Image 1 (cartoon, one colour):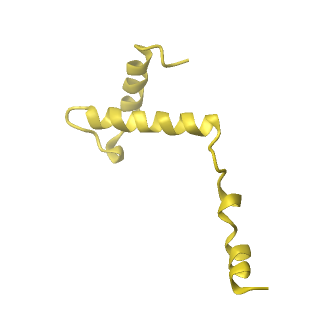
Image 2: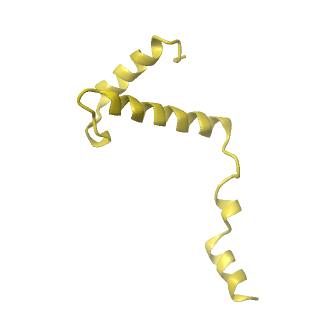
Length: 71
């Protein structure tokens, strides 16, 4: 067995760790997270994620609801 092959087996191949294309769920989750991050940055003053609380989340959902983006 070659040294590289042993390393691949020990670490696992990249293909086995993550799918090549994310699922629709994962894609939407990433978009939602990025949108929330932008929402926090656009607040005056900007809100760091470390200082985000439940009120920020609820305000964000109300904001999205204006555009029919919540279910």
